[in-house]
View: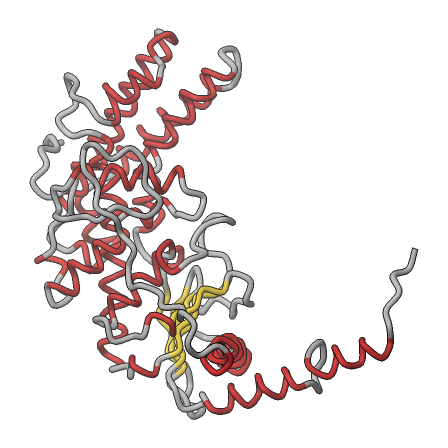
Length: 388
């Protein structure tokens, strides 16, 4: 059955919106034109682009899956959830595929250990932010794989051993014999190293370009991680790093998260024209969003105004039982907060695993003049990973 639409009222509706030649469309174009001189920063899952303004070509920094070491570290950091997944599979279906999957992880660990070396991390993966820590990373990777092999091997020999209780006591948290460093600490370390690398490169990128942050237009576009993740300022790991890179100069309202906005083609070093072609659309998208928001002050002066806070971390104590936002990390040995963040990035659909400590890594870099060697990597620095 067709839905009746009154043509006269529909015409009035279309006078304001739902078309290219409407009041709203003209408003959007006017707002975008007024922003042409301002710097525009666009972040995607793989790239960070600065459009300086006034028609200048963009400058692009490649991130995440197109950069060194990300997948190699993720392979190790994901062992915690992977082993927990095998445990859950065995609980759901004791006669199912959990055995084959456990054996697959064991074989993967053995193969990774054979390839793992100081030379691999120093000379081939060669991440600038990890310089000087290659031996420690090598020992951490070897240890993590060995502990995983041992735990899963014991579970295969005695399926009754594979429980949530043994997972926590003998693998994730301890204390247990043969577990001088818990896997929780390893996960924090690997997530932190990922954030350290990204933070170092993003901060260097912006420091080199000398952004006018007070007038910058910043937008994170497209999917970033899992479908439900990175949809707010506080849960978007790249957004918190960009904010840190501004040293507090970026007005927090100028940072927009737009998961449904189009994504420019991933930069491959040769397709800058394709990236540049997206600028107009992004300026219109950002400008219309902010210009519409600014109407509120004209329309509703005297009523309480929306004022987003910069950072929404909460303080926790050993008595805290639930949280709604990331807990504040007071120091690199604040293991209550650090481990709680591991739980939160799994439990909160908005979060990304690697975002557990990205903001803390970026904050330490800013406090130490973007010098990775001056930063403490929790879960790696000072931990007793055995010699290989």
